[in-house]
Amino acid sequence: MNDTTSDSWPVAGHTDSGFESVRRVFEQNFEKGEELGAGFAVIKDGHIVVNLIGGWADRKKENSWSDTTLVPVYSTTKGIAAIVLAHLVERLPGGFETPVADVWPEFAANGKGAVTIAELASHQAGLPGFPQEIDPELWLDPPACAAALAELTPMWPPGSAHGYHPLSWGYLVGEIARRISGETLGTTLKSLFPNVDFMIGTPASEHDRCADIQRPRDLADLGEITPPRRAAFVSKWSAPNRGGAIWREIEIPSANGHGTAVSVAQIYEIYTQGGAGIMGETIFDALTTARTHGPDLVLPMMTSFGAGIMHNTHGLFGPEPTTLGHSGWGGSMAIADQQNGLTCAYVMNKQSNILVGDPRAVRLVEAVYDCL
Image (cartoon, rainbow, N blue to C red; front, side, top):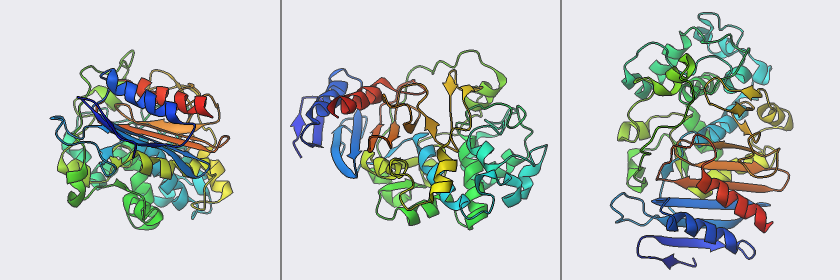
C-alpha cells in the first residue's frame, strides 16, 4: 500500500505510475494542518489509479483512517441520489417533465400543482427550508418532514428562479422516489450498487466504522441574509442535530450518505460513463442538461444545475467546463469529467466553512489534471 507515517498522521494507499504527485499534494494537506482524516480516489477510463487514505478516524487520534472507514459526505450525496431518481423517473412516460403531483398528489398544495420533477430536482421549487418555526426533530422523521414540506407555499414562483435546497431537497426527492418505486431511495441505491460501500441510511451495525466529524469553527459566508437563506441555513430549525445514531440511520438523500472515497467515485463514474446501464441515453441527457444558470437565491454565487447535479460553471471542478459534480458541507467533493474519462472523489472529517470548492479538494483535482 506504499504506507508512510509522520508523528501526527499516517498515510496509506497507492498511486499508479504517473500520478505520484497527487500523493504529495494529499500529504501536504496534512502537513499544513488542514486535515484530521481524509480519503481521495481517482478512476481513469474505468480503472482506479489513485486510492489514498490518511490521518485519523477519531478526534482523539487513536484510530487510523482505513480503507473501510465510512464518513458522511453531506451534499455530495445529492449527486448520488440524483442518479437513483433518474433511474426511477425513466419509468414515467413523461420522464423528468412529469408534474410532481402526478406521483405525489399532496404536493400540489398552495400552488405547486404544475411543478415538474425536473424543476424540483434543479432547485426551482421555492422550498429551500421552513420559513416558519418547526421543531428541528421533524427532520429526523422523513415521511412527516416530506408531508410538511408538501404543504408549504413556495418562497418564490416555481420555475422563475433557483435557490439551493440544502436539506429539504433530499426529503422531497426521497418521497418522489418512494411514490414511484414503493421503496425508499436508499433501498433502491443498494439494489443498483450492491457491491459498492456507500449507504443512504446507515444501519447501526456499521456505525463503528463511521468517522468522527470535527466541525468548522466559523460559519460560511452567505452574504446578505435573505428570507430564503435564513430558511435554508440560518434559522435555529433549519437542520436537526447531525451525527447521532438516529441521523445516520434515517435516509436523507440530500445530506447523510456515508461511504469511502472509492465508493463515491464508483457511483459518480455513472456520470463519466454516460449512464453506464443504470439509465438510457435520453434520461441521462435529461438528468445532466443544465436547467438553471445564474444567481442562486440561496448560495451567494452563480450556479448551474441539472436535475440534481451541478455544472462546473465556477471552475472548481477542474479545467473542463463540461464536468459535472457536487460539493458537500465541510469539504467533500466528487467530479465526473466525461471528456477525459475521469472521476475524482474527496472525503474528510475535518470540516471547513467553504460552501463550494474546498481548497483541499481543488488542489487534489488540479494535481490529477497536471498528471494527465
